[in-house]
Length: 245
Image 1 (cartoon, rainbow, N blue to C red):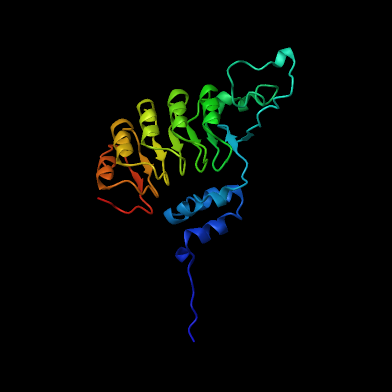
Image 2 (spheres, rainbow, N blue to C red):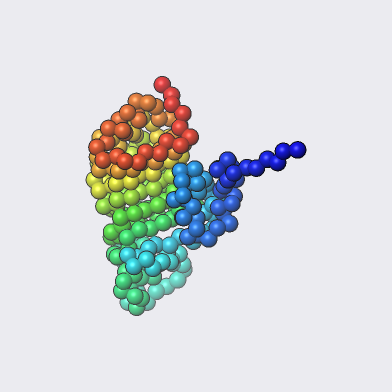
């Protein structure tokens, strides 16, 4: 009688996602760097469910992202909110470590935060944040309007992850003309993106070094040919892509 063995590389992504969901947050990030298959499995929403969103300062210290203030709470005159909403204003700048001021934040990871919407991205864009990296993957309420806000207030981003967000070619069109600094773009599992979106990316995001198109099922060979003409492109992920004419 023969004994059958199954190597971990043979497991379906759904099984890997279940395993990864039990890991600590830092280990979830590490497994995503092992190989393409593990990275794709780590994209599953279940892996990140319940993970608290945190911003990172250049010193690597996590900064908790506070909840919006209670609408019924009355602040004193010296703490009256300004007319322009600013994310993190209620937490930062009140006797905390100066190195954690919001204008020193370099990246923000909001992956799988179900309640983040276009309105939240609007506040980010209006908050004078000088971010180089933003991850809103698996935020189901993020749509095309968010891309317009990002273009207006977060145009200095170098890395943007929108995996599984509800965006389309129209959102890409509203974003790409201002994002001249962008180097890496993740639009994996954004199933509304077509060749038109890829053509816009190829025409305007000429500094891209990496793009993730995992699970973008509406793109064709024509769109890919345009993307591969990007002069600086080094990384192209096409997992779960099936070529259509």
